[in-house]
Length: 150
Picture 1 (cartoon, rainbow, N blue to C red):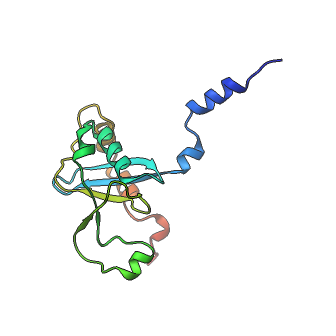
Picture 2: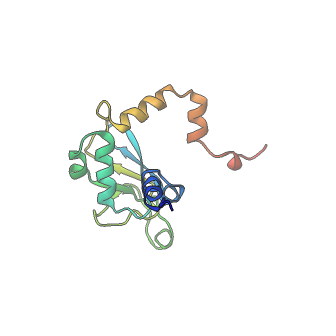
Picture 3: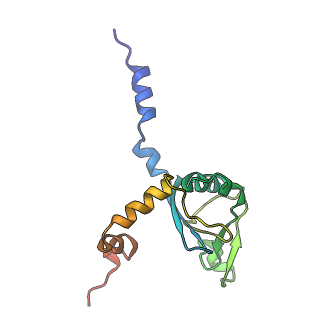
């Protein structure tokens, strides 16, 4: 009798599963200095230091992970914070051990996020540059169900 358990398990581990993708979120990190931005796919329960490490890998510069101080906009509050906090202008620093939570837009202040040639972020920029403007408008703008008929 054939034992297919071990090879099947190895094959499933090598293939990205839909279950794993369902637990990932896309986080956009924008440089306030240069206005470059990077979109990262990280686990939903990632910590801020893990997001910083993913950012360093994406732009092809590992030192970014230690130098970057990730910020959140004070105007983006969710849940109870939206009710009790004083929403204002500016940004607040995130602690490295803090959970990502519902944050999907982060910022860095003194670091340029221009990607190194050949890095994953560089490849993503090249793909965005080749996309027609109509596609960018569809992906960046409001979703069709948000558009109201006149």
